[in-house]
Length: 211
Image 1: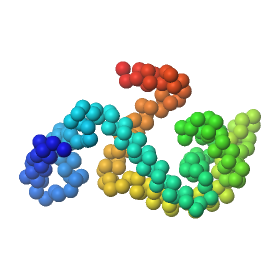
Image 2: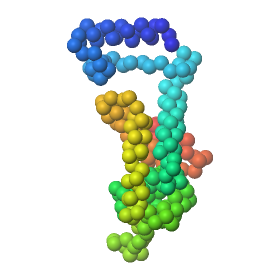
Image 3: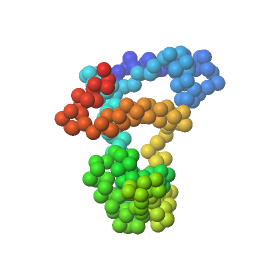
C-alpha cells in the first residue's frame, strides 16, 4: 500500500477529529466525509499496476458468492435438505405462494431444466404441492405444504446465523448502503437476464444498456 495513501487517510482522520472532538466512530466519520464531499479512495491489490475498479468489484462479488455458499453448505450438514436451492425455493414459496413452476424458477435465476428438477424433488419429498390455479383451472400452481414448513423451520435458526455471518461486521448504516447499491445493480441486470440472450450475444447486449 502506498505511503502517500496512508498519509492522506490519517490527514482526513485528523481533520475529522478536529471538527468533531466528541465523535469517534466510523459511521460519524463516513457521514462527515459525505457531508464534505470527500470520497475515500480505497486501495486494492494490483491498483498500482492499473487494475481497474470494475475488475476488483467483479472479483469481490464473485468471492462473496463463494463465501456465502460455503457458510450455507455448513448449514445443510446433517439436515434433510440435499442442496441450498431446495431451502431457497421453499423460503420463496413460503412468502410468495402460490406460484407457477416457471415463476419460481425465474425468481431464483436458474435455468429452466435445473429449476424444474429442484421443484420436482420438493414435490416428491412432500414439501411442495401442485394444484390447479383458482384463477385459471387450466393452469397449475405450486405452494409449500405443512411438511415443507416444518422442515424449513427446523433449519431457519441456522440459516439466520449464516446470514448474520455473511453480513459480517457491517454497521446498520453500512448494511443499508450496501443493500441500496446491490439493489441498483440488481435493477440493471434483471432486465438483461429476463431477455434470455444467447451466450454469444450476452456481452454486447448487456453493454448496449450502458450506452
